Length: 426
Image (cartoon, rainbow, N blue to C red; front, side, top):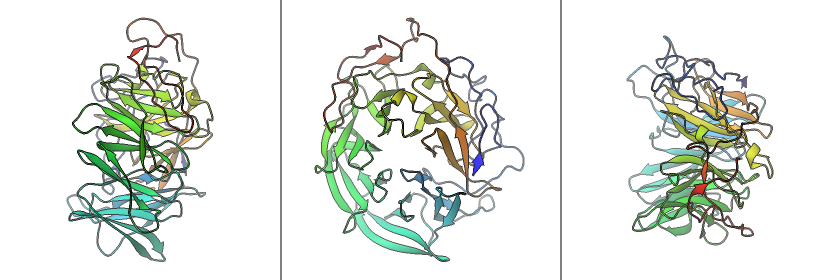
């Protein structure tokens, strides 16, 4: 496992990303690239001569268990440019003294649109599309070979795996439709894939709200159109749906991440007038906020991991963000109480958007390159200086919306009132 102290400096030319900007010196000002698409302090966008060309990556290739003990991805052996290479699943073990990868190839190569998800017992679920069916199997190492346990199939054209359940044994899949969406339990059931719920509307996303794997948040658009709103689905009550996000009646309000310990929610909404990244607290009367530091110019910012273990302290949770620009992808770290976006170069060969936090604030970033076929870079969350008081000028405040009082044992809407300016700083 490799320590990673790379803020403001390169970590080598990455296969899918170049190192990113240095940290800004102003607490509330985003780091703005000197030229469009080129981060301040970054290495050039073109890889250095002799940089690792590596194995190709399938879209969304790296998936982690909820506790970060195992990871899984589709990968292919390195080869000459233009050479056709076979895809196969690979499992990473990350909870030991050193990370290591186990290839899980079968007699026939996988299609690049197959999806994989690791389970807490070390097995890997794979979803394959075969004609108009979605087929599911569990893969596991058996000495030098790969064992496969077929779980069954579902007849549908489109289906996507959701993040592995926090219980470590269950994986759900979503089959969206224009009028209704079907939620399936595809691993962890007694008799193969099981239909859990039919939810009216077109659903997407998928975020777990608790550690028991009972409450699942989905982004839903009702039949006939209209705004997208995050809803909570209770899996122990036959998929009962309740409102979760409604910042304004006409805004698209999506849930990106949730932390079960602190209640911190990461939200994307156009309620402020255009698409913004914001944060709120589940079951709280605090407003939803849209920090200026989370919208640096000419890049896209997407959260991918929240620090666990911060009981009742959502403002102190460190959040890891993937930052994508014309020069590649790099890493951001931010806390709600700090209102400052720290930016780091990514390790060479980082599986962009993949990573997990330890409870003591260390970010683990999986990567693979020519010299390290299975590695984890460690980045400690930096401290935040006390931010200055916010001014009342345009752009100085964080737009917000009020929330409804909490309901016992149920996720509650984060806002049902018109958008207004926050009356007090974070």
